[in-house]
Amino acid sequence: MLTIELNSQHLQQTLHQIEQTTGNLNPLMQSIATELATQTEENFEHEGRPQWPERLRRHYREPR
Image (cartoon, rainbow, N blue to C red; front, side, top):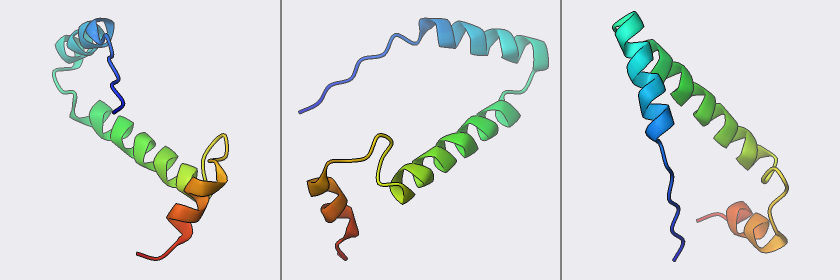
């Protein structure tokens, strides 16, 4: 099992400051979501960046 832990305290503080200034985080969050989706799609198109190991490339090429 893989466990990833992130300390997001600084991010949370920054987002709170933005929210206090603008009053609305929705446009920012939509922009971040769009960028993450774009990056994810590009990773699959290029079979990873850096490229995935061959066994993963085969796995995602095979029809399910």
